[in-house]
Each structure stands twice: as C-alpha cells, then as structure tokens.
Image (cartoon, rainbow, N blue to C red; front, side, top):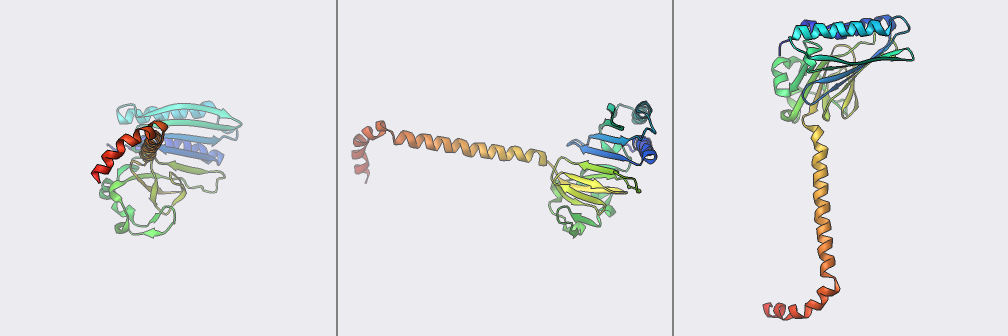
Length: 244
C-alpha cells in the first residue's frame, strides 16, 4: 500500500485541539482486516466549537481520501455533551492514518521494521524478551501506530484494542487486558495472536459436541435400563451363553 504523508492530517487536527484544551482521549479499535474504528473525546473548555471541529474533521478526511485516490476514511459521527466533543471515524487501513503505521503478519513486519523488534516485552509479565526468543511468530500479527505524549495535559490517553490475544509489546505500551493496551509517545508495537477472535467458537463447538455425546449416552443407557429391555433379556441370554 502506498504510504501517504497527508494521511496524518486527521490526527494532526485533533492533536491541535488537544493543545488548546489540554485534554483528548483516543480509542482505536483495529479489526481483523486492518481497518480501524477510532473514537476521539475532546474536552473543549468552550475554546473550540462543535461546528469548528466537525468542519476541520470533514476537511481532513476529504484530503485523506483525495490523497489516497479513493474513499478510505469516513466521519461516522460528531456530537457534544457536557463540554466534551465525541467524534468517530473509520478508516480502511491504519496505514491511511499514519504513513509509518503498520498492520500485518510478523514475517512482513520483520522485513520492514526489524530494528523495532529489539526491546520488546512479554505483555502480561513485562519481562524483556529478545527477538530470537519470541514464541509462535508464525501465528502473530503486528500493529504499529504512533501513541500520544501526555505533555502534562490532564486526562490525555491513547487506547488501542486489537482482535486477538496480545503476546508482546514495546516498552512504551502498557498492558490493560488480553486485547487492550495504552500507548505513550512514540511508535507503539503490539504483537497479538492472529485468528484469536475465532478461538471462542472452537471451544463452543467442542463443548457442544461433548454435550451431544453425553446426551446420546444417557439416552441409550436409559433405554437399556427400561422394563422393555429387561423383558427381552431372557431371549438374549442363550445366545450370550453359547458365545461363551
């Protein structure tokens, strides 16, 4: 995919608002295909109007789509409540948000960003791990996006959600739960288990199969223990005796 510098315009505009107000929360949910749903919460402090933010967002998205040569970003909603503006944007791929962002398989990431794999940590334990000690890399996907430095601003946070179980993170990433992290300034890297979203279905199918087998076994046992079965037993006995 062609990397486009102009695609950073959406983030730049919103971060400009953050500098004015001192407060912005970003939540980015990455989907299985690399697309993303992004929610911004901006405390305006009456310094920026809802209309100004909406117009700037529309302008930025239009520039992004023009630069890509197709519609890759969409403004889903903008609303204000109690002095906080909430804006929701969707993009076809996180690379359209930031030309140095990445979504894809570990093997592809290693080719383009090999040096970025130094200094990773196990997500849950926080233990440092060398690149050649990473486990299960054949089944891992990588997300690389730029975080946000708080810069002293209150309630400033960047939350990232991915569609699989998180295994490894870079040092500027804080583990929240199996699919959620927060990012500080600089580029954050998250390695997660590809196809994790379908794991629950496998467990459900296994459990369902066990239940079906158990029901069939119990039903068969009840049938065997019924009075009709006992009345038929004498006729079957001679055959059994002859076999012995």
